[in-house]
Length: 231
Image (cartoon, rainbow, N blue to C red; front, side, top):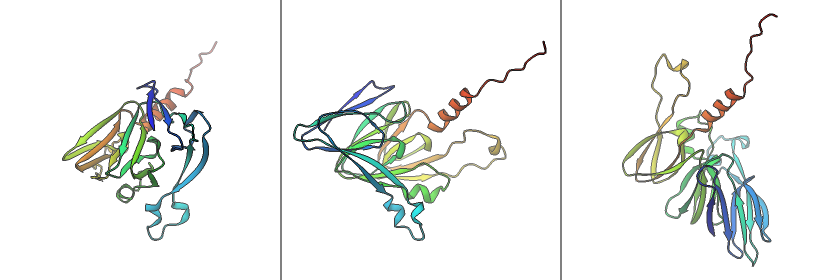
């Protein structure tokens, strides 16, 4: 599979050139266009890490819908775009498992296994509502970011706002740090949740936070209040 990125970095689009009989998986809804006689199929992935836990009902097991695109003997092409505006990066997965934010996963080689959930975060912080995916195998992974996407090589310890984390290798030990107690916290907005990464491995971050942008857009779209003066 050959990967080219168009319109980087502000509005990146992935252009994939598939070899004959090659198959790729992509997040549902990511397809812009395709060329060639590609066979498409919708797949379902369940959260195996969550399913193994005792006393977990079926309604608590998260699911992920993917679209499979398989080329014929002539090969094919795909144009894919993420749900958020920003940059894209192609990561070669082989040695480590990759933990990636659900909203940042765009596509991957069909040889890579995908499971929903990363139990370490859920056990440390129940209020963390973001869904994480666990990927392992040998192949390419395309990930997206809101705004810019940059890579950090960690060789000891690093702390970062959890909302900026896009993905990281499981060679890193991740621990969500407790928030500092203060009487001012109930009145503060935009409180950061820090996550500490220890060990050696790669960490991918985004420059903007989806929750903060959604809040800013919602405030900007609210109708202005006009005070009418009597005639």
